[in-house]
Image (cartoon, rainbow, N blue to C red; front, side, top):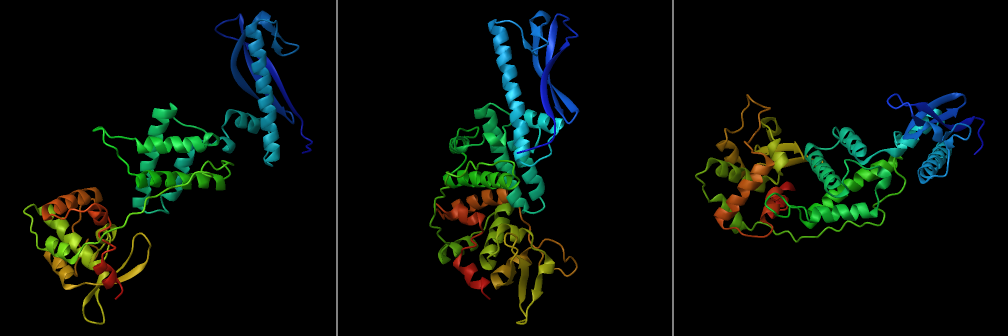
Length: 368
């Protein structure tokens, strides 16, 4: 590519303030008369520097190593200049220095990408989704510290091996009790979130080569079982002395008879309850995950639970309809309920987390 700008690189020295017999070596970049300097973090004895050739004087192994390093820096600076021209970016002494030092967009790091993604997506993605991205971020930071032995890496260093090493790290990650933390699908979800962030960096032109190009996410498919009518009745007819278990049981039953997920029940308020044309109460809400509007008839079993917890109040429209614990606590209590009622199935917990949104009762009633 042709250019009319002037460009030069020279090496020069300055006397060390702490040791007058030593010279500190710098590189000076000049573009169109504007110049900037880079400290090369190298020094040489006064008598060993050739100010005419701007190189070390002599043939000792120390001087040969120094001169090879200066040749490397010179070639690297020329390459930075060439890259900026090919990318049609502004070429200046400062832009060349920034490219050489890795301080421009071409040298973004993994942590910078994560911070950019989380900052910009915080107002776009749901809080529950963002929480999962923060968890992936923590695993990535632990992986960098434990396996890469670094606090951060450049995006251009991401490759197929980084992905597979991170996968192996996640599969073998154990908690303080030496228990494996993640299943196969849990590992794949973290890699899926990393892949989405890498795709963002490609769109931003922070990285050219996609490290996930030859990597395939492999999720295991599970045949979800549903609660049977007997199991549902068994839970309904079981009374718990502990208030926390009784409350979570009631809200779980409410979810079974409405088809609403945990977050939908948590966000449910009095002003989302209204009478329909059939003179019965209905829930008018939006699904948190899909933002889809739904109308759900409140069946007698669900209405009994609403009335048990103070009922529908006209004076407190914005008040939460039902008392609900955190998602983590709720799942823990549901496990106790499953044990107490004798419902033992491999998929019970996963169904509880989703509040049996696939339950045949919920699907039937959601079509009203």
